[in-house]
Length: 128
Image 1 (cartoon, rainbow, N blue to C red):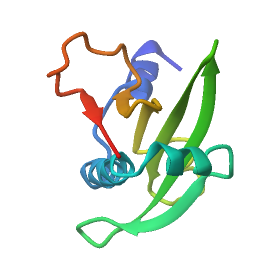
Image 2: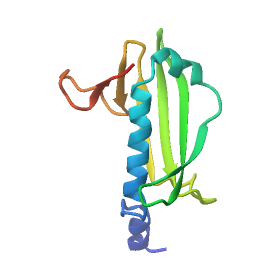
Image 3: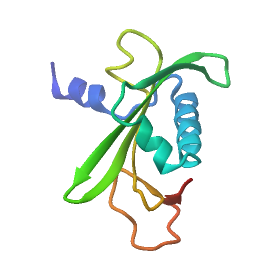
């Protein structure tokens, strides 16, 4: 396999259903932001929550939400992974959308990147 083909294989090309999958992941994240930390903590460590959901075109997607409790020294936080795929056999291996967020007991939920320094940064969210 030539390098050009490998580059195309790993590229971030737009795939059919990505816009709808992004909406469905964002919808789930919005719902989780309005859930208390205590309730999210109670859902941690169990099996992934898998549901079949319809996009705005009526197409069916599979949305998987996994919540894990992570400890760093004495601090605890929840690692929340939301994946949306096309529902096919291979969809779980190559989801259309994957969002990773961290939730802390003090009411913050941030994406899987460095915490912004400014409190008014739009990437910083409060929930619950």
